Image (tube, rainbow, N blue to C red; front, side, top):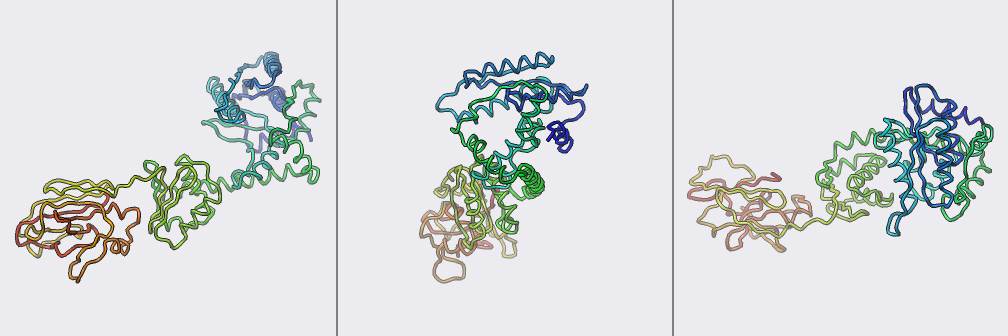
Length: 456
């Protein structure tokens, strides 16, 4: 099929170019990019500016010849030319393909900024898209990954456009032959050392032979997935308001996730991991987290890739990064007219009190302690194993742990929950939960008013 007709249709369909654009055209010297540059020059409108950008990967011995060809072509058409030669990478660096890709696009963005360009044009074509689809189908498992190569995408506020995305490699060669476009072949593409090369050389031809229209089918599927992902992205932004993210800790209500459709909750969990700097989460991990959320377990915690910890405590779900610090082991003296800020953010404050009458209204989070009944000074500490308290109007004592379970205090908060004791270690009060017989609603003599503030 006529390459020019396809490219014009693609540009219009995906709105790839606008009047007044300055385009940075990435040109390697191969048939694809040389054909793209030729097309732009042949159909260049008066108000469209072209900048030629070439990256010499300095891997092949003849890579200099690629650069000479691109520069000569740019000069012959009086187009601005910019080039970059990549530096060798050491063994401890990322793999070369990842390094080269990041370096290329960083260079293209830099050149775009220099010339005030808003778009970067690259020469990915229909065969590239099919190869990517097959590669990701074998190694990825999300709808987003199966979108393959998009006709346009965003990078640092710039658009990366792909006008050849619906053009087959065969038609690119035909275009070069028709117009006498000179190009250089990268012989490393004929090697089977890389997965992409094996897909290109062996799998794609077999698939195309079986279904000649596979390119258009895969593009239609990618476009449909892109529309779906756009919808889900909008929904995800709306749902993100239900997530509290502070200092690498994400909090949300358990039923918030449970009421959500699994497709959205899966995407929300992936975004949370991304926000915490961990992109490495597989579908099996997402499913495991959703199973934990929908289970009947009131308290559970588990680590996932990227050192992200998921903690479920009754009605709350927390995702945090790194090890949680144990804050249960603390002891502070409660001094009148002073505040005690606990490691978990809770607060206690005390004040002198004398002969408070029965009709005085007392908050449920406040208590009077009579000096005649306790051994001063008094302290606040975290829970200890085996702690028991003698409750008001009850015979005997009850385990503090049982009280916390009945009150649905999350497991991760139990050890750090404040326990008020006197100098003999006698438990006087579990602020916010239960009072002992030593706590009063009024006083006949001198005492201490202690107030509890949750998450002040």
